[in-house]
Length: 255
Image (cartoon, rainbow, N blue to C red; front, side, top):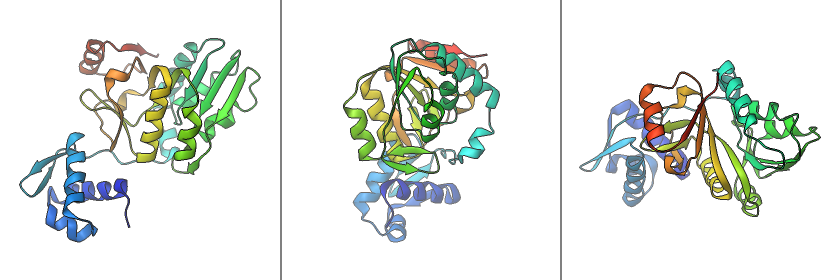
């Protein structure tokens, strides 16, 4: 049996292949009720991925496929290094911060080796390993179920861990950033944990290379109104630079 996330990804795959689907067709293929399918299509429609039609839906745009950590590591390496180094400059002595898992946030961790009295909570196994022997960092690892695709912990245990803390800053990695739909990620449980991070932090700082602008992944983390700062590279388009500044978001170009 497919869970909600898997079922919606299957619907998007069918839409990408066929261009349009009918509720009756999806009920038969996926073995769930028409009410469930309509709820799925409404959810996908609210993310701008599909347009509802009589008795079904049509494709609006396809979210990008999720890549492996190895694939992500090989992309935009220089830009991510600059973004991570700039993000580290925003960490002050005595800060309590949470660092999301990811191949951009790992460069932040690598620039914290001279940190002084900083407490770092993270759901990223690779980030925890990077900071494990740094004298000036007190490390909190969320625990939970390890998702090997992203080397990130997730689930109720991870969320319960974060729920008892308050953080000065969240450094958040994303899979997509869209002016209308906000910041998004591929996996439902990761999005849920990210939303908990957003709730527990005073300042939300997004770290993303410019290739993520204009992308919408399946699961929304937050609307852009919740974001205080974005750190990216010089590849950002004039449209997105202007749009983010109009929203009152502090924008930094790391070079």
